[in-house]
Image (cartoon, rainbow, N blue to C red; front, side, top):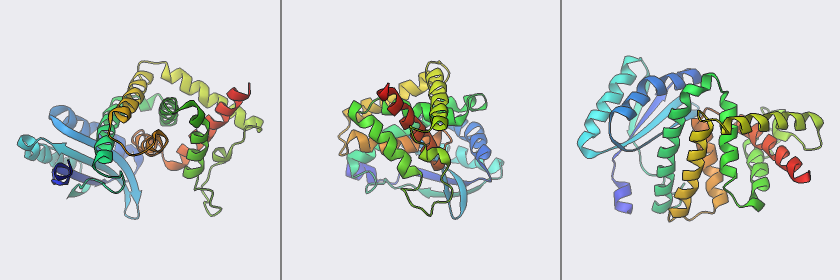
Length: 267
């Protein structure tokens, strides 16, 4: 498996964009037709921010016989929209995912998550991306052992609110919401109602429920080396990224879901 993973057959497009709506537009106008028009072994995307700016990152593993055609198609479509693109070979993240088995699981889930995010993309105009990300988070957490779900939400909120650092100036109030604060309880209740409603729909809930079910199936069937808690911690973030949520928003989502879960246990 290691020799297969180390072959440079993943192409990587780093596309610089001015704002988040541009990510959505490029996914619709460039990525969707390429993914739908070519047979691909695997693919996935992320939105990313570093010192060089906001980016859409697209990684594609095409079949050998069609790799040149897929690459040319993506190149042409990005060029037609005047985007700044840096293109590289993508190497498997063996250290990050703890070896070949972890990489295999991560790539399968990333492909599945990217397909699901594309399926949900048209609904962002009518369903706020925060609700989608919250519904996804809740659906994945349901797959954890019952005695880990509350602690997972608490730790996830803590991590993405800045790991408790006092120097984090952007931490939103909802990321430190308490179950004894009536305003926080009301806010958590509203989010829970929105999540429950959307998870019951075919347009949003069905794809997210299907993704969560397949995520845990892939986990159980993989030769992974991490606990379900750790797998969820890592991949909830990556999928929320594809749904358009940023870390500060993830902190709010998890904290409010935690407040709601504590209140439901208390009642």
